[in-house]
Amino acid sequence: CVVSFLHLFATQATPTCDEDEGACPYKNDGNGRAEQHHPLISEYLEKHRAAIESLRERKEPDVGFIVMQPSGGGLGNRELVSVAGMALAIATNRVALVDWYGVTDKDISDIHQVYESPSGLLLSYPAARALHPDWDGWRSEKLMIFDSTNAYNEKWGLEEIVCGHIEEEKYTVLRIITEQYITSLVERNAYIGNILADIQPALYQQLSSAFVRPIDVIMQRVDKFAQDHFTGKYVIGMQIRRARDSGHFFLWDDQHLFWDCARLMKKRKERDLAREKSDEKVVFFLATDSELVKQEAMKELGPDVLTVDIATRVPDTRGTEGWENALVDNYLLSHADDLIVSGGSTFGYVAHGRSDIIPLVVSGIHHRCMRPITAEPYNIAYLAIKKVSCFDESNMLLPETDMICSSVDSVHSCASHSSEKMAKKHKAQKEPHFNLGSEENMPKLYNAALKKLRQTTASEAEVKDHLQRALAHLKDNKNVKAR
Image 1 (spheres, helix red, strand yellow):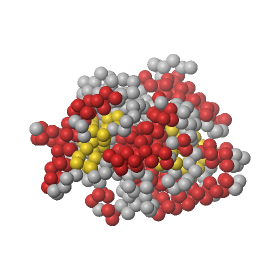
Image 2 (cartoon, helix red, strand yellow):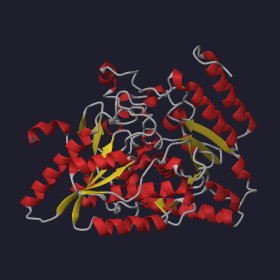
Image 3 (cartoon, helix red, strand yellow):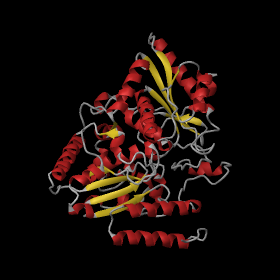
Image 4 (cartoon, one colour):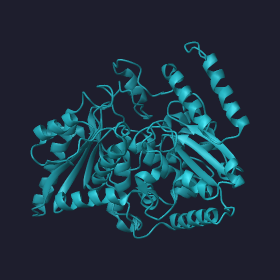
């Protein structure tokens, strides 16, 4: 039986930090607590504090700002966007702020409603601007858009992020509208990417431990549950994304792979513990957006399945309470000793990126569980990098950017350069979404983009230019009725 399960596992990689703790002196506990930071991060924190203090004293800061505005998505997307802002700020000698105003979820319009900075930083763009609203620097803003629904049609922000001297931009504020973890793109920039390389390994973990963490009331729930239920146990965290609005959103037909992988993982760990003469018990912690999945997990894996006693749903449909519950689930995943996650789910990305655990990823395309070579989050629109003028396959299409995808006929995108040809040979109900900028998405795409443009403080001329480009693109497309 065990032999028949071996196909579920690809090459098994062990986190570098676990092999050599000395290689990761700044590694945190997986939940946003670090005793010390990398020198570049420490330098950034002082710069951030000094800039905010200047605003508080109604003085002109001596640095510019990166303002990250999530264009949508749930908890995972917004945390990824926030942390990516810090990465870009370090690389460009700026200070990162987060502007959640205008995204789809009206109940959570400011990052400080559910997150705080473990370093005591002011993260909110509206709050920072309120400190010195008359400062002329706020009106010197450049807008860049990198949204998965437009990335494949327009270069807008992508060209500058990957190929440009973005560190030399004269605008005081660079506003980036995205729902992606753009750090992997910044790392490919020939002028600034080497700065972030110096912080590796465990880049996301180190950035997040300095920048964002849930507010105390949420962390208290996380710590109590972990203490009550995880102490003395080997915990396998399982993140199963069922569906938001359709049966094939993630892995409806391949759900059995989760149970197969979980049973094998438990069996192997119990074997290792027996060799070590350890009486540690192996249990599962399940985070899911489906009550049906929870019931099926109990049936398939038995009584050793732990869950928080909440009906977890996609956060942006439930307001503040839903966000808080989702954060509890997510940070408990980071407390686990090993992880099994859904391919293509940003909720899983932040959990394993934060803990630096290289997870088993359930892939519907490959019909197996696979371990990537890094715990860093993916960018689901990464393949748009092929559109930039400086594209170089040899140093831009790398194993660490090769996304392990969910299902071939998923409405979610896939940014796997190694799987692209294989997936197109599958008999899917529709063309695999390696290009989310396909014609069917353009009206929704540009309506959303124009809405975001109207909500920024960009100059009138810049907004007008973006509007004209968007309308011209719509008119050129024969399958879209130009408005």
